[in-house]
Length: 455
Image (cartoon, rainbow, N blue to C red):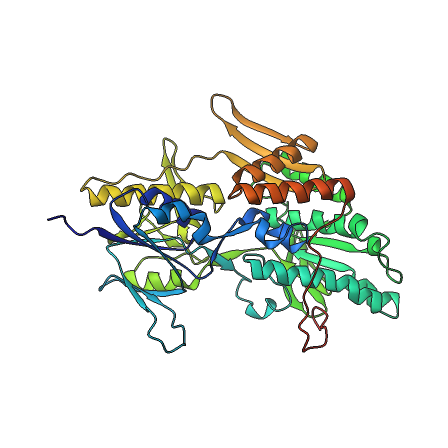
């Protein structure tokens, strides 16, 4: 008589969870994939949805469609539900109640658990800032930001005087990482080109895009020379970059921040009715619940410390991957922190799944080793920076038009599915030729008066 198959639960269908499921789908295990949404999201292009360059379906796809081949193998169950906690003693994942009173599944048993639940926006302990400065992690975030951006220009058109209109035409972006830089460059293009000639009272080209970064340079994960190139490209586009500035308050009317010069600190106020948060993320609340249940340590960003093989200390049956893992890669030069980017999440997902199968076979697990292929960031139209690690050659770094083209084709290549690639290629080609952005429609409920952002 055949032994029962091991039960595997995977929480989250981001890059890490998706790779784990694909690796496990051919193995003799029973897989249950749990995700709070019904879609896989290509987050590197989410800012394009927020700035009306792409529609939501271009950067997302239904999970059941993405994993349709794996579903045909008969060992995968997909549940749309929010995992809220883990009962490590009974080896069960707890799901949020549906509230429909029809006896929905609220617990899933497991023999092995892979947690790839990702991260959420973090406003550094200032939860009240979120209503005025939304972050960008989900499709809902992107659509909210799009409505605020488009609504800001509409509000400026309704202003009776230039002073009031100036605040609506000022866009503050907090955080000089890739997301902030990409948002800043794209918003400038919208104001200078996309909306030109479409308003009568306000002049969109007068819009100010201000990028505020706490560190002394933007794109701090890149080498200083590339950071400087990105800064120069942003300034040529017309972005006002302010580094070494720490935000102290955000409200409906704008941003307060401090700038340190030596021992002197000066305080400033920026009147901006549209503020976008791109300064930080933290692990989802499930991470803290899991830390409490297992005794695992957790860092300030809500990430769980994991063993070299990505399992939790004392709980080899639980692996954590992606943004929720405070992982280190163990190579010949010693341990190095793994960056929270999509390539690392994919590699961790494959590693965790392979180690799980080794445990099922009674074999020892292997330490995770991250292969860094490099980093990319786009600054704006025909402007980007690229930092690659090429085998046998080493570091290859370049910027400008060639980097922008490389960035375009790399992102199209890694999109999920032919349809998504075709949609993105078509929209980008049209935007390049015409400066038009194809996804500028904003829905307003019929039952309510249109509300301007921040009002």
